Image 1 (cartoon, rainbow, N blue to C red):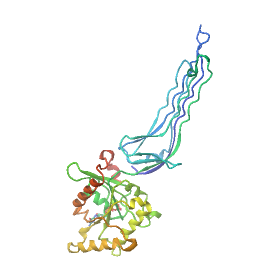
Image 2 (cartoon, rainbow, N blue to C red; image 1 turned 180 degrees about the vertical axis):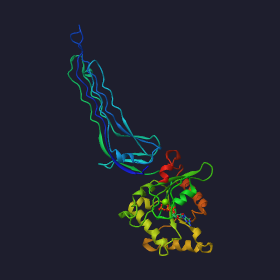
Image 3 (cartoon, rainbow, N blue to C red; image 1 turned 60 degrees about the vertical axis):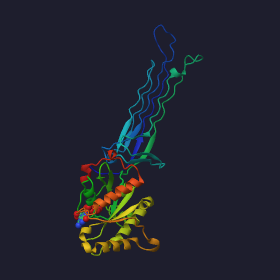
Image 4 (cartoon, rainbow, N blue to C red; image 1 turned 120 degrees about the horizontal axis):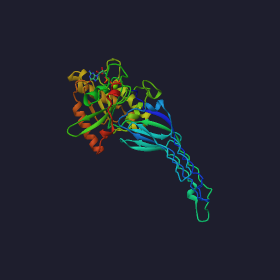
Length: 362
Ligand SMILES: Nc1nc2c(ncn2[C@@H]2O[C@H](COP(=O)(O)OP(=O)(O)OP(=O)(O)O)[C@@H](O)[C@H]2O)c(=O)[nH]1
Ligand SMILES: [Mg+2]
């Protein structure tokens, strides 16, 4: 299944059926009263969050949704039937905006949560409603109301407590596989991960949090380098970012600290609020550094990453781990959990997030 996190659709609700003018015609009753019924309501269009789907790919194939009109009223006091509503299923985490006004119409963050996208027109009134003591033969009826029409922008932003950030090959997927139930693809070439993977990390009885692994980010992503930077939207709902850094890059000319600073710049260019989120440094692949050199390597990295003067970057917490051997992973997860408990009583509701093995395998 293809992972798609953005789509543009058009929804048109049905018009209400017209009310009609009609009079009873029965044998032996020369002047029957009005009996024109009301029109039925036009079909409305709704969005419904469904944890069983996790991509907007369906809305790349079908983009226009038109609900049926309500039936017109008929004689003999018969009301027209209402048209059926259309319910569009979207992944949990989908935000829906009016493309023309930019207004946020819905942010569906829970399974089964529902939002009205386009309201069906009301049915018109038949002439039975216009009868009065002075007007026994009303020739009046009202037309059905028009259904709403909207152009919409759908954007999926996954729900996770913690987001992983870093260059390709930093070991993000290896880390999420080491600490959670996620089984993403891992490989020694850049851009292995092409879509977010979610994993649940369990830290002791009843305690867990959700981590999002996303594609690698490189300098120039804002201009489209690598996979671009659009997937950073999946970090926007997180409470904490873990910036993974390869402390033992294969390329001898690589400058881990400089590259890490470049990642922060890209983050800022995408969204200043995202760059302002709490961000911890996680120095990965520490197994590649001889034990005696580790402390010095970490200290040197942090010093160069932080920088000086006006361009100094904040350094909140620093961890050295090996996602491969799992060294240091547990203390990190415990610290993350402790931190999340201080910033928010409730973590992302696991029940609302689906961890699709099919998609995870890519
Ligand atoms: N020695 C060592 N290798 C590691 C460690 N973590 C990851 N690797 C290796 O680094 C390579 C890249 O790992 P991935 O987990 O795919 O990296 P990623 O950050 O998800 O990469 P992209 O998905 O391309 O952004 C793989 O060959 C891993 O086996 C580690 O702690 N130590
Ligand atoms: Mg990956």
